[in-house]
Amino acid sequence: MVRQVRGLGILVAEDIVWVPAAFDSQVAKVPVKSGSPVRPDTILVVLTNPDMELAANDLEWQIKQAEATYADLKVKLESLHLDQQVTVTSTEAT
Image (spheres, rainbow, N blue to C red):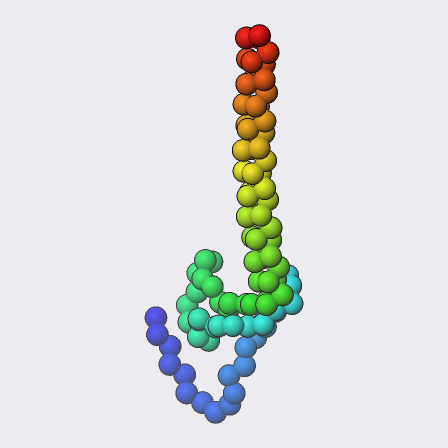
């Protein structure tokens, strides 16, 4: 059903809903125009926070460093284990 109404005046929204963000951020992009149909999974705005992005990158590097440290320790322990096996074998042989 299409309804066309003509008249003088200003179109004003009846209800304004403010959606607070969980963190301080800046609006980077508004992919949906006003009046466009939306669904529950529609992204209305894209927010950015440079401080959080830097913190996320820092945490990624910390994870990579921890993984490298773990791999290094694993190799060292395997090497020590093999050295001890050699020592035990040479002691048993004598």
